[in-house]
Length: 286
Ligand SMILES: [Zn+2]
Image (cartoon, rainbow, N blue to C red; front, side, top):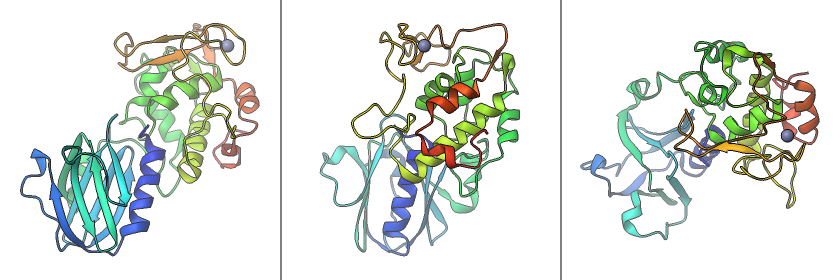
């Protein structure tokens, strides 16, 4: 699932493979890219800003992509998918870069990238860790928003997707439906979220349990109707169309009861994440 950590790993792979290489052939199959040709340009850098991918060239242009739910990239070998799914193909000096089913794709002047990403909140997976207090302040701007909706709102904080909007509330024992203004110790959830997504960006793949080797890599995401891994209660959830924030969601009605006020439970989080390498990140709450 393309969230901030996945995009960071993708950008790093593109940079490591192709930075400094010239594009020798460029094919586009997307109406938004008619007339676009990167042939002759040198790929300078690839970067992820929240869930946006920026591939920069030495002629002052940036290829911008947002993968949404469907897009992906093949980095290195030639893609084998049907041509119509290959929206853009760049033959580099050593290998090929192909954008598959990418729903948002365009070209922008590198100096004007801000017009696409200037609205984003602090970037979770940037070079330096984001400021947790600033993120907490952004999340609290709309106190009547459900917690999951606030976490997904990219102008608040850039990089969390639905996996984290389900898993982080579970780990700290707060419902995704609990409105932000009634959540105490939100700073603890933010610190933990930064630690978890940055760990996954460094190591991959996405893992919210810290368990490896054929055990589940997440707690409750997409497990609506199954027993809570902690208390055994049947998990509840929203289908995409039912949810106030238009995304599927899951929660335990007992561990994550909605109350007039509810505090982030860091004792629970530390117990659940006893095996997760996120514990070694500086932002992990002590
Ligand atoms: Zn439970």
